[in-house]
Length: 66
Image 1 (tube, helix red, strand yellow):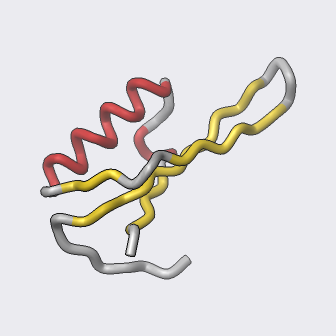
Image 2 (cartoon, rainbow, N blue to C red):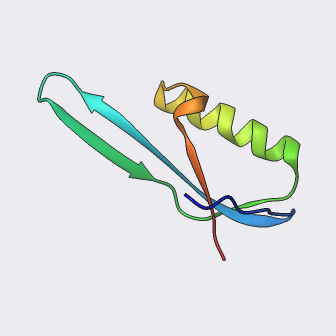
């Protein structure tokens, strides 16, 4: 993976997976591009997404939309 430096404002996509233990399936989810204006907005967005999806915030990957 290539590390990219980014500035604000910028658009990001967030990717995460959830495991369906009953069916032994891993589902991959990706959000649409979201405009992030600041570091505090980025942190709030990550926390909200983790809470909504019932996952750990460290399991969410960010992708800069170029």
